[in-house]
Length: 144
Length: 144
DNA sequence: TAAAAGATGATAACGATTCTCATTTGACAC
DNA sequence: GTGTCAAATGAGAATCGTTATCATCTTTTA
Ligand SMILES: [Mn+2]
Ligand SMILES: [Mn+2]
Ligand SMILES: [Zn+2]
Ligand SMILES: [Zn+2]
Image (cartoon, rainbow over all chains, first blue to last red; front, side):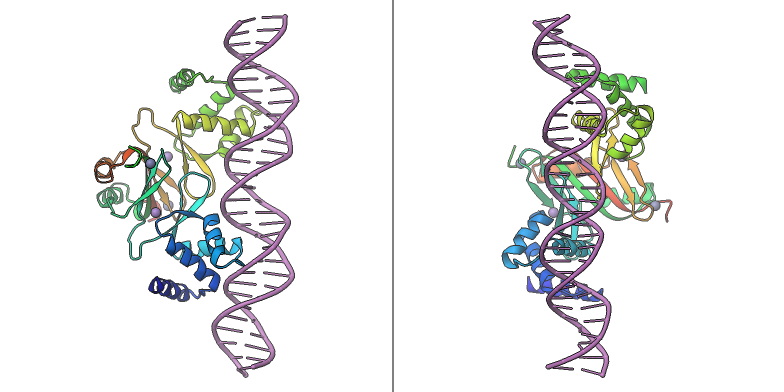
């Protein structure tokens, strides 16, 4: 945890941003909820528990900054809110998601799985892939 | 075109919905812009050209209805608006997209490409796939 | 024809996100 | 340490896509 924050701090400094107390509190919330898919409002509520003076706008600004630095990925599961997902450190690509249409749960797939598909796309469509989003919608193992 | 509308009409009737003039005008716009990825506002503007009395709410309602019937798919490329994409008739799954981070263009991939990946997901995660969303972000062939 | 149900259009309401601006903080020079 | 100044913050207003409301119109049913 502390090492992870230290590395994010360095990453911020390398682009001449500071790790302010508000930003650190926000990053801690994200780290503590690594498996969740929190909205900005969710993050705001959780940060407030530890840092009650923080403003919603600051949370939005911090999430935007972290997205820019690729510390988090901003995703949209079609429910009208953006969600923020911590990227695995050193992961080449964003992980995939399994959204259950019964219970609404969101599970993660960390394996790449797309290597072959990406090769085909790069070759056949002459498209240089920088990132991807893959979400499966269906029935999760708990709801079957 | 006419046959396609006829089939959509039947699909509506089978669920006891009617193909009103407003709905038909909206469907026509979608058919005429099959390769685009129009927002509700875009559709509204285009329908107005042929049917000036139509209201924005009706367009939203029609798009919602068509989404429910799986005539269109509602997608979100992360720019703050939902876009509506006509489904290929008889296509088992939604097609994929190539979003260019240089010029903003969105190209389509109609090929499935995910058959193997889906088999792995169904088996290893015990997840029953009903649909998917796959988008690649990168540099398109025109911008290279 | 009369009544009921379904659709529509205008517009108000809503909610997530962004913007504005006065104030505060933190890094750096002296 | 003190002063300076750009960067960051918090409160609340503004924006904007979308949804809800409701009176009116249209179509179906009895
Ligand atoms: Mn995730
Ligand atoms: Mn498409
Ligand atoms: Zn489930
Ligand atoms: Zn391009």
